[in-house]
Amino acid sequence: MIGKKEQKIIEKLKQNSRASVRDIAASTGLRPSTVHSIIKRLTENGVIDKFTIKLNNKLIDEELIVFIFIRTNEEIKPEFFKNKAVKEAFGITGEYDIFLKCKFKDIQEFNDFIMNLRSKHDLRRTLTVVSTVVIKEEI
Image (cartoon, rainbow, N blue to C red):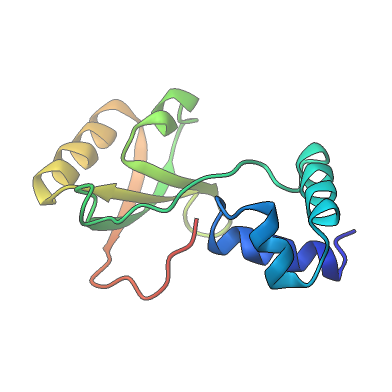
C-alpha cells in the first residue's frame, strides 16, 4: 500500500526524477534517511519501475503525434512494438484490438510507417487520429 509519505515522494519524483534525496526531503518535510529508505523500498517492490526523462517533442523531431486504432486478423509480433515511433501500445476492448500512440518527424515518416504496417500485417481496419495540440502529456 502507498501511504501519504510515499505519495509525496512519488509526486516529487514525477516532477523531477533527478531530484536529490536532500531536495525531496526539504520539500516534503521528511528526513533524508526516510526519503532514501522509501525510494529504495518503492524500487525494490516494483512500485517505481524505472527513472526516466521527458523530452521536448519539437526539439527531437517527434512533433507529429498520431493515435492509431488497429483491428487485426492476426497477432502482431512483439518486434513491431519495438519500432522507435511506437511510444505506447495497449490492447483494448470494443471495435478495435490495439491502440497505439506514435510520434513522427513529419507526415512522410508517418505515411511510411502506416504503409509498412498495412503491408506487413493482416489488418481488418485502422483508424488514425492526428493530434493538433498537446494539452497534457506525461510519461
